[in-house]
Length: 108
Length: 148
Image 1 (cartoon, each protein chain N blue to C red):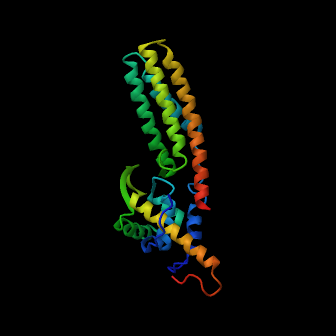
Image 2 (cartoon, rainbow over the protein chains, first blue to last red):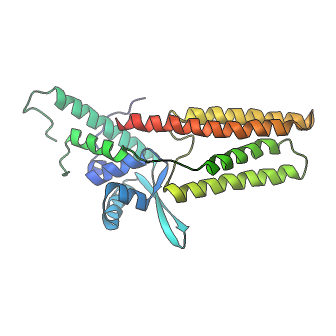
Image 3 (tube, chains in turn orange, yellow):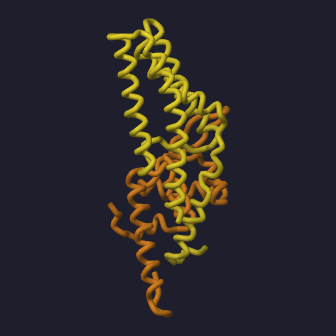
């Protein structure tokens, strides 16, 4: 079943959009992998994750590995639904702007 | 990219993040062999005489656990066989086949012949390797479709 398009301002910020895009393909991924993939610092990624976590969209778990703690991040069911709905909304808006005459496109 | 919610720019950003993720998954042959052996043992254990059935079962579960840990360390991500919408059907088919083979092992144990677990275990070994490679191929295609 196709998700109902809903724009989500928490997900839409560029960094968080990319984090959700990566996590949508897997169950969970390691903090360092996501940081390297989207090219941000540890602190920037931590801020994005905190906002996603506060919205209930991601779950963070810590596991020891080679003598230090590593953080694993996964989308929650709520996060997966919200991301799918947000992508559906983006596709709907993109289709609208593609078919609209010049000067009448998406304005936010 | 700015905070401006331009939908095409946002969709391009999603495609870029998904492009070639999770990247190359060139896992070595011993992953296949370990997974095949664990599944083969899991199947064969049901037909083995005591105490080998318990030993084989413990080894199979330990092997599967070791595989998951090793994969996570090597690649930095994990996806269960049953999570992706399309590839999960390969996992369901695999689970059905392995359950059937477990039944075959048990049949050999209680009805005979008592060597049947070797046959079912061998089939389980091969089926697990072929199934895991097939699952990976379907999943990669599913990811590529989602990135379009």
